[in-house]
Structures are given as structure tokens and as C-alpha cells.
Length: 207
Image 1 (cartoon, rainbow, N blue to C red):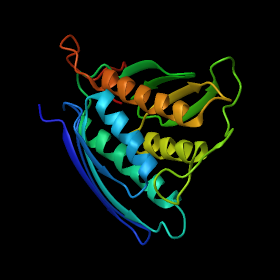
Image 2 (image 1 turned 45 degrees about the vertical axis):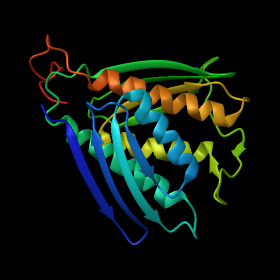
Image 3 (image 1 turned 135 degrees about the vertical axis):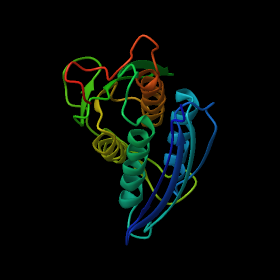
Image 4 (image 1 turned 90 degrees about the horizontal axis):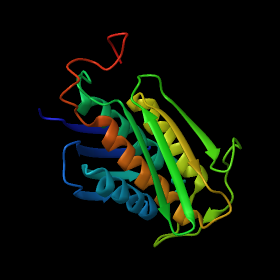
């Protein structure tokens, strides 16, 4: 089964080309024009064993918001397209990943009902922005809020229900690394085929 997808998106704000292979080897070539996002998506691909290629241009002279969000939209569309009718997939995925003092947990369900929920690992406390990640290689800053916007765009276009938990008041770089690694591993688990599942994994008969 070929579970690959190509997505192109052109707007007045961004121009994006994306290729995804769900059954890859973790190979990546990512150029979003946002260095820190490149780093995060490289981790996502490597630890999810997805082959991922992205070329993106956007109105960075305005802000990184449009490019960041539209790359999330395209990645979600590619996952949805590559999954096809979703027959035989495990559907649910879970991963907990440490990064030095940082720790993140991602639990997801490819349910067709998109939503993302953020909580502190130490309790049911909304996880907010505690800090700003300073520029990495270029002038643009990447913040916790940008990561939240990216994942909101991803879950909406992929049809995924996701819960993200992490520790606050630690190095934001380490926190985001742990989140994107956990996302890759959880999505890998959820998209894997199980030979025991012969149809769509839902009592409704559709996802």
C-alpha cells in the first residue's frame, strides 16, 4: 500500500510544497524559512520515521505567523490524504518523551473530530506561554504560542484529536523539542497498520 501524499498551497501570503511518506525511514529535507520550525519538523520526521520534504516561502517581513500556520495546514492535509480511507490503522497513539529537564506527553486519536488540548503535566492547569524562544539563526522569534498555532492548524486539517501535556517553567527549547518528538512517535503509532484490523477502526464504520 502506497501511503504517500503531495500537497501544494498558494495564497497571497505563502507558497508551500510538501511531500510525505508515512512508511518512510525518517528522512527529511525541510526548508520553511523559519529555522526553529525546520528543527522541530526534522525531529518530528526522524522520530516518527516519516519521510518529509517541505519547501515554503512566506511574508516573513510581516511575521512568521502565516508561514508557520500554513505549513501546519499542509502537513495535516498530507497526513489525511496519505491515510486514505483509514482502513487497518491503529487510530490511537501515545508517546512520552524527556528532553533534559523538559518532559512532554502527546496522546492522539485520528478520529475525524479535530481538537487540541494543552495541560500542565503536574495537573489540569492550562498550559500557556511562559517564555519566548530567542532567535535561532535568523531574526524571527519562535514562541510557545507559535507552536500552539502550528498544532491547531495541523489537527484541524488532519482531523485529529490531540492532548498535549508538558512541564512549564523549564527551557522552552527543550519543552518544544520533547513535544515534537512525542508528536512524531505518537502519530507513527496511530498511523501504523495492524493486520488484525480488516476495516475502519470505529463502530460507526467511518472516521
